[in-house]
Length: 400
Image (cartoon, rainbow, N blue to C red):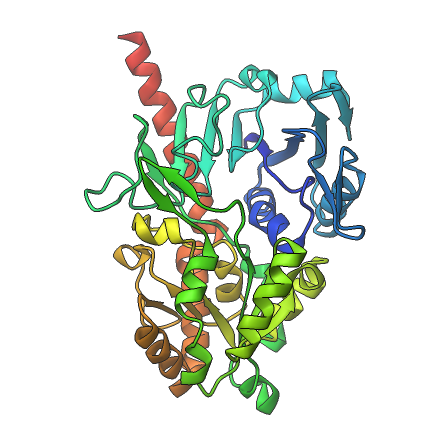
């Protein structure tokens, strides 16, 4: 058993889909027998989002309660702590406890790189996990403390390959994938072929942030978000008999305007905020879908990053097929059954038709991929072992 401090971005943005991206790590490590502490810091002023009021403040209590409730729901003997870096106020613990946890931890996992405190250096083994390839490497995230880790992992599984356009920034990025806890998604409703007419008529869905933080110009070239890729497929519904639905988040005015264009083209549009209100509404939406259909961020596609979605692994674990724009993940993941990759409108249409032609088989394949490739039982032991090996190698270099 190891004592592990996990850092992330859940208390500041307590929507179910976002929380799950980190909670699968927490719960997975707990199930593997490790002692886990969750630690998050404010990062910047007015960083805490309240989904009820739909506003930002410095008050972390809503998010802290949401995360701690989820921890308690799954019987974890774990603590969630939050630090306001400006006032040095600690919630869920006190400074002495935070420092002691860091000093005695065997490992600090900074997931996403949107947390950094000087006190992190108290932990003798620190690991960064990049969830947003390209944007992290060019300094959009994890700029603070960038050189103070002992191992670096990325969802950009193709970084370092000659065909991948992501700069390494002089760092050896080790490939990893988003973990999922299949047990969260196990339910009789997930049995393929048992959904009847309701499941037959269910739409392919996804939950997405329309334009996130916008375009980034890097060395004279533009790297964008999902909006660019969705607009390339605007007319897709006219080529399909199956309904396609987007649950979108973003700036209210922008989403209202784009929703009109999408609906005119035949897309169904929902409010992602309502769906992500809590784990129950989020999981019900996914299990009630025929499968996932989604694009990826333009930057992920352009760089052939190899990125795979932490949202898509939830669909897979729920036994729902995933049709996802290829970011280069087809270089390392078996596709064609359960997970289907496309790079054009025609390929997208073909993928939808293939899933509909043998839906129960694709559902079974989806669940199998979740268990064999993305399960915490597979992903986390490998990550921990690799991190320990990387630390030992670094120590040998330091001794020399």
